[in-house]
Length: 430
Image 1 (cartoon, rainbow, N blue to C red):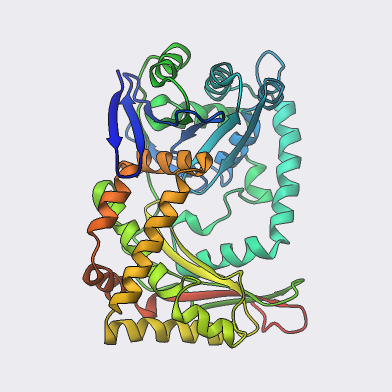
Image 2: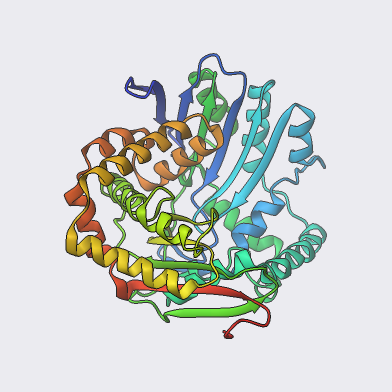
């Protein structure tokens, strides 16, 4: 049976349960809404290449999680799940990140039929040598396109600047060489290991019956719990980046940059949730588009409206990043470090902190209307060991002193690196 959690301060109700097979289930009911959203996610991403199962370590090629996502829409009956869902009024899709693979759909009709299709195709692998070979060519083209895409390159190279060992530094899709090693047997094996219900969660938002959602999961998914693999992300990371800079010239109209730092991540639970909220608040205070830093550099022509800052928790890492376009990335980098130094020396301005706190709280309230974002947040919370709607009560307790301590201890200047893509003819080279 599902347990009900009411959040009257934000007008939300959450239903949660963990089934006998280990599946974690979260449903946020939205009475009166016509659209519904469902996400079936595996705690398995591009960084999960080495793991321990049954006391033994197993190594897999880079790109298996992403390859598996591409192939899961094929069904044994010869149907394609994406076509089947679309024909029943759903808008389906999927994604693979460094830490998660998720399959989802949105629909205004036929929700329960579409939910059963989602559960069935994700839990039923079907691969042939011919289909795997064909997909290898498609993914190879995708990899080559990403290698020529400045948005991907600037991010991937920042990760390589920051991390020495963690596989988060490598592309989720792998390389043309690594995916050549992937066979149907590789995909079947990794599906059995990572797509077992004990390593998955089902998250739903909409005007739905939570018990009916749970009943569908019980009826369609395997009844037995599976062993959850232990992840091995390599040797512990040093606090300092591997290298402070990356620069490359590509076909861009203006320099693109991302600066970032790797932090000391909490492992899970309430401590992780609080760290993420405090960190996000610190970034909002320092670098949001309402901050003195942004407005000063915008007026100087050093930043435009593309600039943003955020955090990413994945594969045992916590990374802060800020970036966009600038004609002088090095000046932006120097100004950002100066802003951190000023906060440490002078403390946080009470009025600015109050404004940042209200803005952060307000943005989370607005995010409750995005069912896709809400289900993603629920999935991250399930895999992180906390409740995503607890964010609001936790945020109310965050103080300026706690935020300042985060800046002092985590956002230290020596931890930062920067990746830059220059226009051809201007760059300094890699």
